[in-house]
Length: 283
Image (cartoon, rainbow, N blue to C red):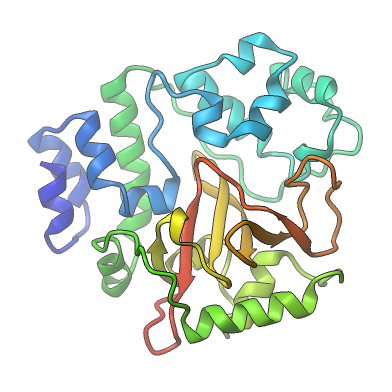
């Protein structure tokens, strides 16, 4: 079973081999709670909703198009992949945004900022078993590229303590100093520089420390969100147990701009990482 495969030393193709041994959607959710969900967020199922996969702001973005607002399974996942093609989707006129989501071949809404993240390949899987296979294949493609020490992190359940690390403290200090200003780089680049890994990309930072339970967030933790088929599109830095530093319109009232400012912690399909100190870090 997949649980046993993940508990054993991870090798190339380990998920495919585990699938061949047989498992259920429940196994996927349990065994992937730390590993696959770090890379890809929660596994979509035929009954997954936009709310479950993305949270209330995404629901609001689709509200004027009932077919999208009530979408489940593959349609819900595809709708979110389309939504995340726009970095500032939280700022856009809701009707125009929903109309575009219904027909993304049309011009993007006025004021839209197109994401530079490559558009993921669409899946045609709609049945539970096929969606599991698709999710695990994508997970495997990520995990099989990780160094052994990074793979070891996948075997550790999310931490429940709020003890900071030297690195998380450093990230917090850098971000607090930057509040109210417009850093000349994305938030993830500010974090990468603070960690002394300026070459790291957004998804590289997923492996910069240990996974933390959302209820145990502490200053300097990294919150990854806006998870699509290929992984997270955004990251914010925890300021305290209710707020993060971000440039995005997380409260629905503060339009996105380059200024780093406090906002509510995203909820739902998120991953929290506490940066490890340099001697422990794998990013």
